[in-house]
Image: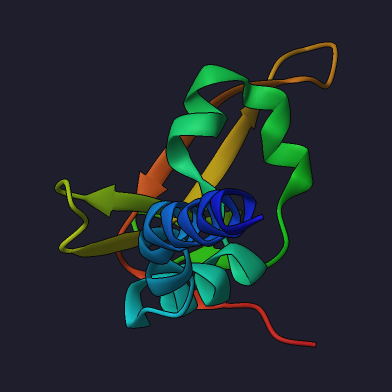
Length: 114
């Protein structure tokens, strides 16, 4: 009986040790900030991998130069571990069939609001 109790206590301790880093990471300032960014931007690496992800954009923006072009907000993580994020407005170029053929980023943009 004591042996079963020791095994159960050891199992709980081991689970606690293994899960502690996950629990600690879940509430960091970085993870909270990343959750906020995910609500308003799309990941640039995902868009580069599959341009159709552009359609999942959450917020529209307008590039100011060289011409006013409508686009969407895209985020790019800087460094590993992340030291911050670069946010840009990416505007699309469309093919003759109406599909997105490319995205161009601009740094001088304004947010389109409701």
